[in-house]
Image (cartoon, rainbow, N blue to C red; front, side, top):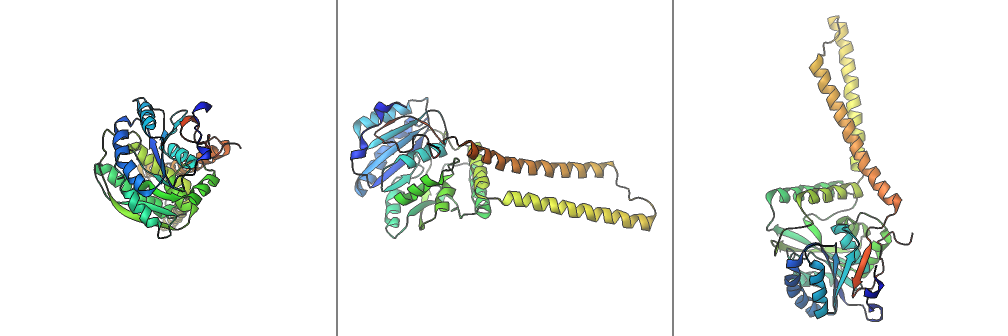
Length: 334
């Protein structure tokens, strides 16, 4: 990490609001995003905009550097390698200085103008204001269905209430940020971590637009599914209990089948003919259940392994106009 780029922000008063923007190969959207976002923030008060960059190949980093030269309130955190959107988001949140923080994507699907509505909602006494999607433009039917079912499945299984039809687009207070810092978890599932912290939470409805330009580099179909699965296994133990009850149910069915065969033997005087196909189906069924149970158990063990290793969620390569507080993520210094 290059120390000459750390900036000298510690002597300045913290801004009122920090905007955290995870980016990866989004050069074509940087200018349009700032053109719409900066006027909104200027109406609210002092601000900083922190781009948390997974190393990109399309000139995104150079584009942000050029914008920083024109506006010193823009900052940049460049990660040492691609850690993914959740890690980039947490890098921005944990290193921002604002009294409040907004997480927003750069593609303008989440309108920067909604920040003003979120800010007004926070004045009602909320520490968290989540932007909930009323409509979703520019997304395929498959992705909408997966998102719809995924949110409701997570919310049904999770140990904390996770608002449906929401992303990471939300406004959080400084005390929420400090509690997130203390959680010290490695997965970065923000939609679950914020409700886990608690405090008063409100929401605003908005219509989500289509992307301003280009295709999504983060949230493709497989990434969306993986993100939803991560949320289930990080915030619920229901799958483990389900596997236990499935095993218990199969054991009861097996005991009932043995009882039926014994009765038929006494009634018919011979063994109940099962047949090769029936036995094959039963073996495959039980084997499938066992493999599924092992897979569920493996998901939990993998997460235990991640936490035990205590590897940082991210590592910072360089920063501009940002004072680092957590250069290696929540596990730094342990």
